[in-house]
Each structure stands twice: as C-alpha cells, then as structure tokens.
Length: 111
Image 1 (cartoon, helix red, strand yellow):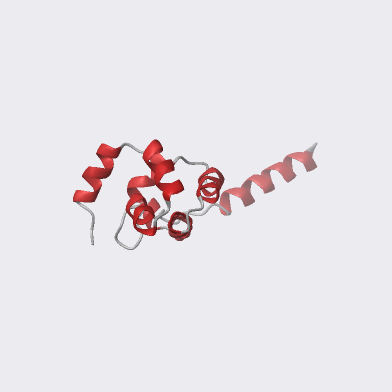
Image 2 (tube, one colour):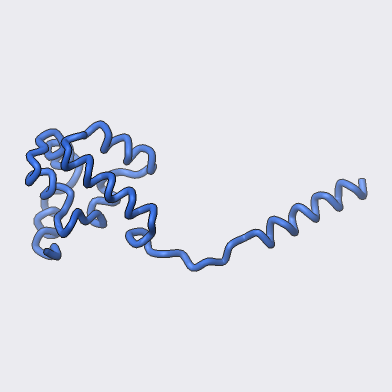
C-alpha cells in the first residue's frame, strides 16, 4: 500500500514538473498553422478539393472557422482558387463561406 502511494505521488510530482509554461503563440503565427495554411493554399491552387477537405478534417476544423486567417501570398483562399482556375475548389468555398464576409475581407486585404 505504501509502495502504491509512493509510486502515485512520484508520478504526479513528475507530471507536474513536466508541464510547460511556454507562452502560447497566436494561432495564425504558429509553425503548425503556417504549414496548414500553406497546404490549403497549395490544394486550392491545384484544384484538389478532396485533399483540402481531408486537411481540414485532420485539423478538426471547418473552413468557416479558419478562412479569415488564411492568407495565400496576399490573397484570400477563394481569390487564389479563382486566379488558378480551380473551379471545384471555388464551388466548394462559395458553398461553405459567406460571400458577404469575402467582400468585406477583400476590401481590407493586404496586397
């Protein structure tokens, strides 16, 4: 019994010491988000709607949630897909995002 209590308390102590107290970065500046964003931009440019949807599914998010944070070399994801002639991706994005938001975002887009 004493051994079990000692083991549990030592594991708990080790777990507490192992906690990181690193300041979290904003979502759109973290390395993993940049990689995710780059992947979505590549998929949109190459008209790979299934791969784009799989990336979103793996990240456990929806396009509506992250759309405003995605920047593909100064363009929104929808504008990049239009410029690349990716009709399947354009149709998917138009169905999923509010086009009023897109008009507002394009007005303030950094180019």
